[in-house]
Image (tube, rainbow, N blue to C red; front, side, top):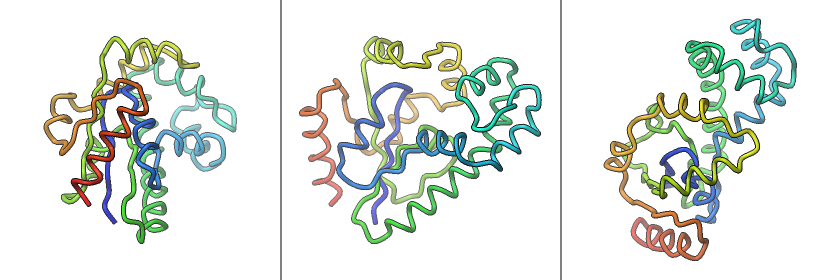
Length: 189
């Protein structure tokens, strides 16, 4: 099984690109959402660490947003509790798909959390900054302050780009993306 990790800026279209590979995808953001909705232990631990902020189960994303904006340390506390669970979910996914030719890892903090292995194929999704911003503004829970906080904990995009074996220029059209994916799969097969 070859692991293909999709990395890039917030809103660059990583999840869209990941889905277009046509292989099993582990989407860390989806897993976090499920943990907030279904995992009582996550709630209990977040409630202990952030008593004033996380008060109801299932955890509401807006509650998380307010918590992150309330204090600089809150994001670190959330990460410390949530990321180990996401890592467990990723390992379950990898075990379940170990006989597959490829798996796609859509994990925003892939390099930051040192999840990469030597043989992983890193694919950087590059998008026009203005187009990214336009698309981010359309999201239901758009909050520029939150986006900037997350950008601060990410490695520089130039570094991610240099570490990547392939770069997909995302112009947000399926035909163009599929053509680039086809090339990548042919190269690594």
